Length: 338
Image (cartoon, rainbow, N blue to C red; front, top):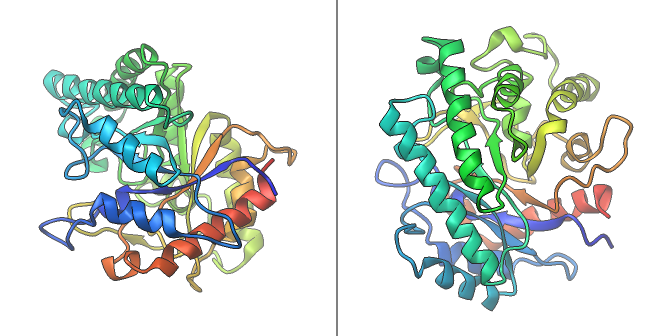
């Protein structure tokens, strides 16, 4: 049995796509207890990745890190990566908006440092995105990408003071990050050692299909999406380009469609781990991210996390859902762990 990478569940699916214009938010304590209860052949989750978002968390409450630390320790879990709530600002917005963006990164890094001091966080990154839409970015592609890169640089300098790394999430709904080529260009433009890429098997699969950036499509429009050789070739192109930057990894399933709920823009559909319409061979295709071009383990990620945003509450409140997710993660670690 491999010990690494550690297996984590995400808590932000209880928030993303939920709220007044959708289904109710799932309480953090519910997500935590269901994560802790999951078990597959004696294997349990090692930890959780956390979205530092209201109403789950209040970053202005100095006692919040201690409360979280006590809760996860009670369940014998660790905290890994954190999602910074940067959407009150914009990485390509006004000076005030960009200042707010960097301030939210600072608060998130400070929160993460306190978790380290409390002994419940030993690894993981702080996740960011451009907090900007694709259509707004397209009004001035080069100028807006330069602004995003400048904001990321400022945030990276703040994060470095806390010993944190920032991972930019590859997702088709974020302006300047909505294609694999734009993503590489932005990372090169940012040029900070503590800024990398967060790959998500569902979101990054859509990079191959050219959603929101047809000029960067890899899969032909008439491609047979059930032809595994076609899928594998497209995944190799994307992963060869982005793997050198990848410092955080989400395991997920995708059926080739886009989906959004609540106020969340459409992006890569997160299917259930057992979805018969899923186009990915989860355990095999994770290897494109976790192994280099020669098939050797990169060991770049101490942990991996399942991301399943925008599932209906009826699905997320079933314990079997989390058992199935854990089983998928175990298969990934069996195939690509150490």
